[in-house]
Length: 437
Figure 1 (cartoon, helix red, strand yellow):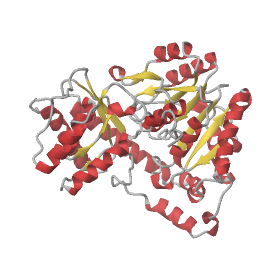
Figure 2 (figure 1 turned 120 degrees about the vertical axis):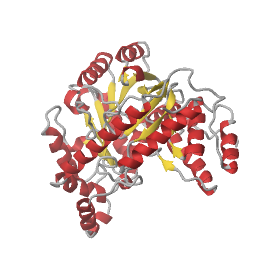
Figure 3 (figure 1 turned 90 degrees about the horizontal axis):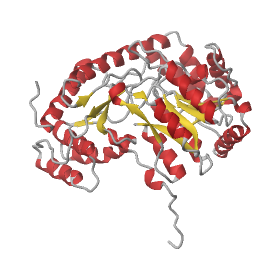
């Protein structure tokens, strides 16, 4: 074309979590049965949606008002409910007008990064959820700026590194926190959160906190919502119902904005986000109307607790089974429903493989792993898929140099989950040329 129409940074828009599905579909056509451990969709993994939740949605679907537009920021009744619920817990006072609804957090993430000034950067954890790192890097047209989550220290953030990178990089305007974390399952301690807030205050930054898993914390870990520790620092918290209810198909999430009155630039930035949402008219109506009824339902706390206990148990199973593999770091998850497995440096290489007995499957996988630029952990993931029928996600696709993979804790049946992890362990040992003890 006579004019380049591709945005700088467009190459940063990668999403291996779904990219691998194209490969899976080709393998399934060749007769391979696949256990999908790549996407965080509890419903797709077989988790049953409670009947009482279905009843609430069914009743709302019979009301004409749920089929119309709602206010741009979201239904006032729901925003009041969420703000009052927040205010009962202490911390910063949240007003209904501080809440903006979106069509899922993917929509919110795109706008939050896309409407930043072109030179303003948000430093993100590494590894980090791809939608955040890709959206931030695409906005800037540059590679992400990161601070380390350390697998040798139970994925705790390297706050000294964060402080140094903020201090010596004046382009950094914000800090991202994902708490509980995706992909590692780490939960930020209150002390870490307060230190990050202190860094932001000292250097005049704002904070983005993805807290969509905030009610899925277990293993006796304790954390705080950002609103409890933010003080006078400008911030955005991202929340939603896709993971917690769970209702991923609702495409319903929201942001809470804190301390708009403390910084005029931040207030103008948030106004631009609202204006962008106004151009779309509004977000989905029915799930917004359902939120107060579902959260207020007497069976909701028990529903959440049952899920937390299951993820806690499965996290322990996976960690115990995989920690015994030499060269593998398998920290248990303490929140969300993901767990990341890391290989020590040099354990994986480009010469390892697994026997694939289906000749057509073998040929297809060899064509993928022989492509230029395939990382060692991606090679492992492809062979695990072809030889063991388990689809995980390479950790290097989460904006990190670490080699490993992310697996979910979503399989609802414990025996099937244990069998899947045992098969993973066996496959890893075979891949490394070892016997599985």
